Image 1 (cartoon, rainbow, N blue to C red):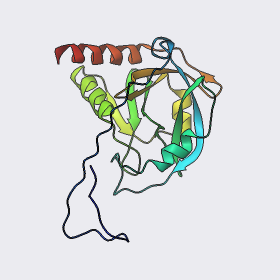
Image 2 (cartoon, one colour):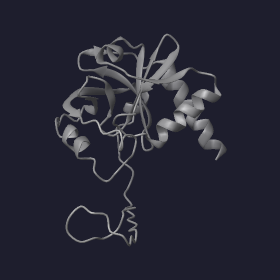
Image 3 (tube, one colour):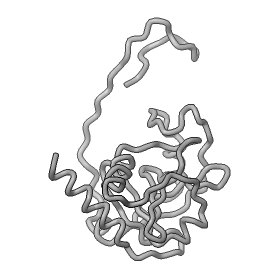
Image 4 (cartoon, rainbow, N blue to C red):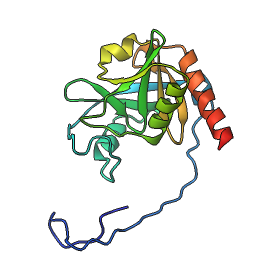
Length: 190
């Protein structure tokens, strides 16, 4: 949904007629072992700009994510993780990030930048119902590399465990499997 048509310049028109755009596509065909065995991800060089007024919103301007995704062409790498200029890990190019450590789950604080994905919020709610600690907080690369496990979410992939970030490897862990089971059970009730 857009604000609608206007003339030249950046001023918001006084009479707004919204435009709705619908685009339908086949679901992406990701390798099946990405769900069962986990994915390889990399650190992106691009850093996200901070704009608290836009933080959390999924707007039509995803140029930073497009530029970050263009940093690699290795088909074995499923996703790239992006940090902000302060070194806080914020998101993947197309996903939200969760880390598990010590039986607790953490996801980046998106108050400054990043997209609050629908699946991210669903996972947070499902974990809350299960009484699993899931906290939004600043996550640094050291937190990511020290985590027991990492998993990614979005509405198309559901959950991917991360098996490798750069040279650091992880075994797909029990939290990603638990979240996947929670999503499947929730879908079955719908």
